[in-house]
Length: 144
Image (tube, rainbow, N blue to C red):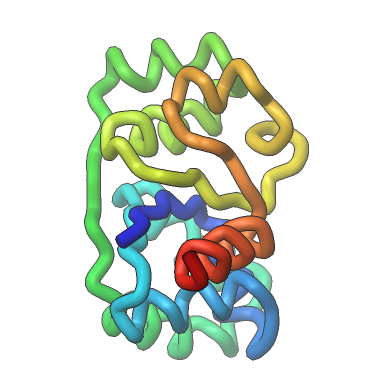
């Protein structure tokens, strides 16, 4: 079973829209088809962003977060500092936690700081993909 580290953009998008690949990943986690890995920082950031931009969706987000058996990891400060050599300091905790967790994929919608960064992906030890790419990989894995 694939383990995916998701940054806050994934549960945010899933709570914000009833459709889309982020929601598909959440549904796959609810049915036990995939393991979603997060850090406390991801959960805090997601709650904060929904509360600020779409407070009416906060109850749905809380329901989703309570329903999914997330694997929660915490990167050490030294791991965050090492990751900051490959991305912005604000995104280094995400990369560090994904690396620490040893996930199959890091899933994000952050095109500016995380996606299309081969050196960062090498550091993390996993491909960094969009929710669509993750769903496509999960689908092809299920066929094989």
